[in-house]
Length: 279
Ligand code: PAF
Image (cartoon, rainbow, N blue to C red):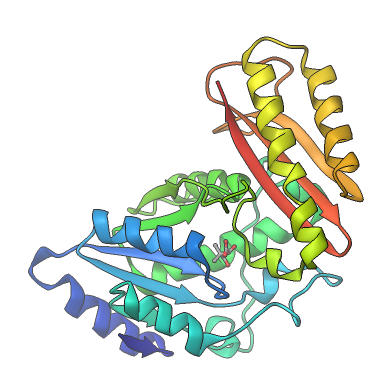
C-alpha cells in the first residue's frame, strides 16, 4: 500500500489505479481505525476495483473546546490495518497540504447542518463539507463510503454531492456495533471501563424507542422515556433526541416511513452519537 502525502503524486497514483476503466472507492477517515472503518473498507472492496483510504484529522471540524489536540493518532497502526484489508493507497496529507497558507474558501451548510449535532457544534458541518469536497477533488473517486453512525453527516454529504454536482456515488455503510449494541466509535476509547459498561443504556434506550414509535406510541412520551432511561443508565445529559426524516432531516412529530431516530448524549467528557431506523 502506497502512503501518499502530496497532491501531484496522488493524482498520478489514482490515474494508474483507474487504468483500463477500473473503479475507485474512497473511504475518508480521521484515523484511530476500528471495526466500523474496516466495514467501510470491506464495502469498498465489494463495490469497486480499488479502495483508497484517507486519514486526515481535520482541524476545521473541531470547535475551540473540542478534542482536536487529544484526538487519537497512530498512523502506523492504522496503515497496518488497511494493508491487511487490501487497501491500494493511503492518502495522508499534512495540514499544510490540505489548508496551505492563504486558504480562504469554505463550504457553508445551511439548514441541514443547523440542528442536532450542528446545534451543539457550530461550524462543524461546514468544516466536514469543506474537507470532504477537497478530498473528493483530490482523490477523484467513483464512489465514496461513509458510516451511517454519523447520519446527519451522511445526509449533508449526499446533499453537498448533489448541490455541487460531484459525479460520485455516496454510499452509507450500516452501523458497526459491539456485542452489547454500542455503536463503534473512536471516541469510545475515552470511556473508563465503568463508563463503557454503562454506555450500553444509550443504544438500548434508542432501540426501545424506535420500536415504540413504529408501533404508534406517542412521540413526546416515547422520547421523554428514552431520555430518562439514558440518564438513569449513567449519562450526564442528552444533547438531543429527535425523530427526523432520513433524507431532509426535517424534525417529525409522528412516525412516517423513512424516519430516523437521532440522538447524542454525554458521559463525562465524552459525547456519543447514535441513530436507529424507525419502522
Ligand atoms: O467521519 C469522519 O471521520 C470525518 O468527519 C470525515 C468524513 C473523515 C471528514 O473529516
